[in-house]
Length: 262
Image 1 (cartoon, rainbow, N blue to C red):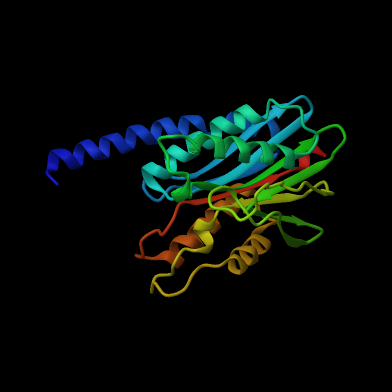
Image 2 (cartoon, rainbow, N blue to C red):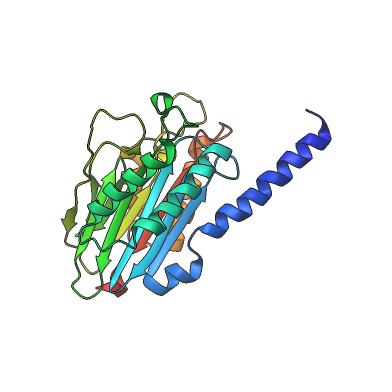
């Protein structure tokens, strides 16, 4: 590859990074809804398939963290699609968050089922966790399509997941329905959302993965610190673990404290 080509490619990635970051919720959006929070968002190749999403409808807040197939340019294009479809389906008047994921799944599959795309070889998917919180009734719901998250409350951390199948992709299920779950949040509850990138990151010797167990242990250990301190400590541990080993996937970790909502 000629030097001019390398420079053009780098410039294109930086421009695409600006566009993708522009689609993500801004600091002011998080400041509006949450007492304390942190965002650790590190695509593998400047742009990637991870994205987070935040909106409000009436008295209800909605938040999602998703991980699309692949990383780099292909993953980023799918993330733009995921954000667009979430913005579309949230306009529906559903009572349960699982219904939004079911609708998202249908729209995702429709996008790829066309004459120009061989659906027999299509495995474009996204793993997602979608939550809702009604600021008046205090009802908290979650639905997961291959996603997962953790909650720290009552001096312990608990791990939650929903349906194992993701949005789209090759599936055995002919008709996928995403379940809705409810959870009681205490006043000082802290929620942690993460993609697979952290769990699958290899260590400095390139022979061990970070693992969910290690991540949950750290989240529990640092949970009493302010969110800005938590993210510094977590990032330090992850970077030390990784060492000179290449980042193996997009990394996303978001912590949210619900204190001012209860």
